[in-house]
Image 1 (cartoon, one colour):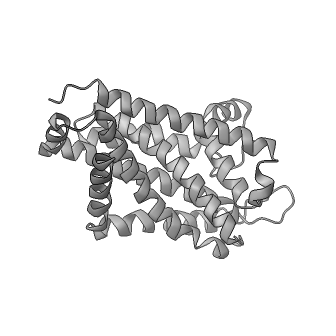
Image 2 (cartoon, rainbow, N blue to C red):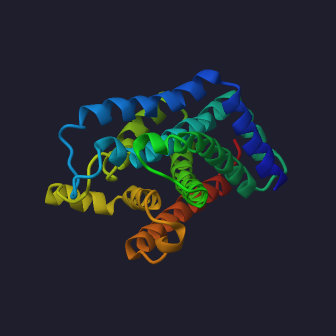
Length: 254
C-alpha cells in the first residue's frame, strides 16, 4: 500500500503543479457545454418537453471530464518511460500490482477532483442535488473514472510516443464517449447506430450517471435499468483494472 500511496501522490502533485493543465481540463468541458448547449438548444426536445439541451448534455459533460482526466493522467506513463522513471520503478522491490494501482488511483483521484468541481455547477444546469445524491455521484464518478483510467493505462503501456497515444485515443475513447448517449438519446437513433451504442460499455456508465442526477439514492436500486447499467459498468471497470495489473505483471522492467 505504501507503493500505491507514493505513486498516486506523485500523480496528484504533478497535476497540481501544472496550472495550465488544470485550467485546460476544466475550461474545455465548460466550453463544450456552453457552445454545444447553446447551439443545439433550439433543435432539441425531450419526450415531455421539460428538459433543455443544456440540462440533458450536463451529465454527458461530467462523463467527458472523466474521460479527459483519464487521458491526461495516463499519458504521463509514456513520459515516465521516456524519462527513465518507469524503468526504475519496475526494478524496485515493489509489487507489480502496487505500480498499476498507484497510477490508477492517482489518475482516478485527479478525475474526482475535477468532477467534484463540475458537480457544483448542477444548479446552473437546472438540476437540484441533495448532499446524499452528491456523495452517490462522487462514488459513481470514482467507479467510472477508474474504468477510463484503466483503459488509458493499457493503451499507454503499449506505446512509446505521445503523438501515437493521442492518435489512438482519438479513434478509441472519444468515439466511445460520442456514442454513449452523452450528445443525443439512444432512442430515435438509426437502428445500426443504436446497436453500436448498446454494445458500448460507456453507454451504461452514461445511464448510471444520468439516473443518479434525478433519482434519489433510496430509489436507485429499485430501478432495474440502473442496476443493470451499474453491473455492466462495474464489470467493465474490473476488467480494465485487471488488464492493467496483468500487463504490468508480465513486463520485464527494461
